[in-house]
Amino acid sequence: MSDILCSTQGRIGLITLNRPKAMNALGLGMVRAMAQALSEWATHPDIDAVLVQGAPRVSADGRSSTHFCAGGDIRFFHAAALAGDPALEDFFTEEYALNHQIHHFPKPYISLLQGVCMGGGMGIAGHGAANAVRVVSPSSKLAMPETHIGLFPDVGGGWFLARCPGHLGEWLALTGDSLDAEGAMAIGWADAQWAADDASALVAALAAPPAGHSAATRNGVLALLAHLGLATQPSDAARTQLAAQRAHADQFFGHPTALQIVHALEAATDHAWAQTAAHTLRHRSPLMCEVTLAQVRRARQMDLAGALRLERDLVRHCFFTRHLSRSGLSSETVEGIRALAVDKDQSPRWNPARLEDVNADMVSGFFQSPWPAAAHPLAHLR
Image 1 (tube, rainbow, N blue to C red):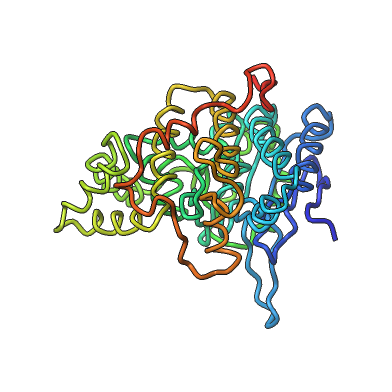
Image 2: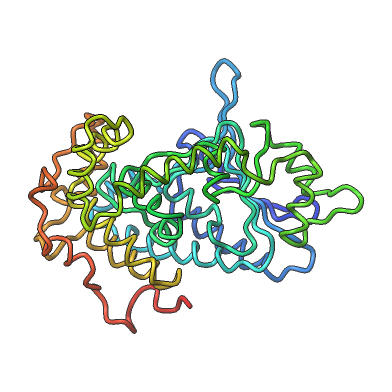
């Protein structure tokens, strides 16, 4: 069975991520198949829109659960880094090019973000794309948790996190905290909320719209979703909660360095939100927290193409950290994946072990491109 299914249903191009046992995590073949389908459907006269969804997993007792996409296949990253497999380089180059392709897709791009949508899943959700329609459901859980594995929020994550209100982007980038459907609607990561987790009726309606409706434009899709009873505006309660979260983020996450952020959080001993955030950050990779903070702030001044090129530089340094003479098992990212997904001891040995031991030279080296501009793997992005 293929890891990705591309078909048509009515006037909809339908992409189904089909690795349910792996929470539909992305592999290189899936990235390539998705890019090819989008290229073909972009100008196909019989395709009005594209819909992307995750295949459900059915347990032994018959219960079904659906996750959109848990991210890239981190076990592959780990094995490829240790083996020197060039497919690792190909994966990130082609994945980031796919993120750019989605951003500029000329037709409605509808993503059903059921269950977990994290990392690479967020990259193919269509964030920031003019034609994107992102639909969440009661089970939705959205996040960019890369600092948990010694990485940084890639797949355009720096770019869309930088465009969150206030300092919410820094909070989400550094901690990897997740948002539910209501939170995603309020922050602008979702455009509509489906009241059920079974989306089959929704897919059928988009493929064969009722009289007077069409999926040929983004506004048309949104009108159809409203007709079907989906909420297309965040609730007052969600707005209120986000405002409170922003107040906390603005109070603590505007400091120049991750170390100063943590010190400010730890000093607020009577502030429960701050203490939780401080505890989280003390368990993330200290080095990658500082790199991530710098990444998000640089991305505020970049377009998506520039941010993706920066991320391609960063991810090369994550696996082959030449300026620190590290690669393979000694890299933060390989060690983080080992602890989370390979040995599963949940005890990464970060180097440096504390934010207090990260210096500016360690961070600045990540922002030196390994390639001349003309030879950059993503030089063609505009």
